[in-house]
Image (cartoon, rainbow, N blue to C red; front, top):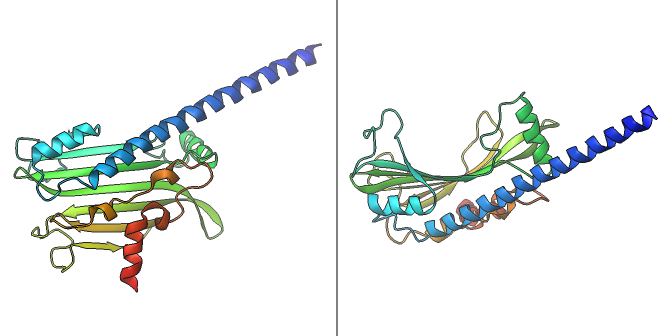
Length: 246
């Protein structure tokens, strides 16, 4: 009888733990999908955002509509706090696994376990820099962590598509000395496991923002597989990069 009682307790505990794990997984998955839909609406609106003429009021309203906030500029910026002419703004959508816990911790082990069952860390974040009352530049990153292979070992690998818009008249704009108003390139990821694609766009009229922000986020929450490549994640930018390499 004691053994039967002990087995019954073990069975009940196993059932309870399984139910709790299933509920946690469902919550994390639903939350991730909800955040993905918010990110999709944000990126869709970025296609028609007036980068070339937006002032601080337009940027502030746009950011607020998508749940963003003003942020304090980094140390060394000319504007230490937001005012009527100078401000930095941030919009971000992500799941609960961002930031990724430090390696070697229990939280990191849980994160890896969740990745095996289709919940992968991802983030869509955009930063807007307004100087002199006018939008000076933006930086948008679309990133997912997934498992990859390196020398026979399974490692965490980042796939990231970054979009930078800037005024060509600014000396620190990557397009400052370039004839093009739009460039796509694959930077070399030195020192870490990553697959990167960068797009630089001038904030002038006639720039193909609809192609730059043509992003398919469905792979961010796919249960079957992560974002496999940029042909899936950023198809138009990847096609433009491929054409440029010919």
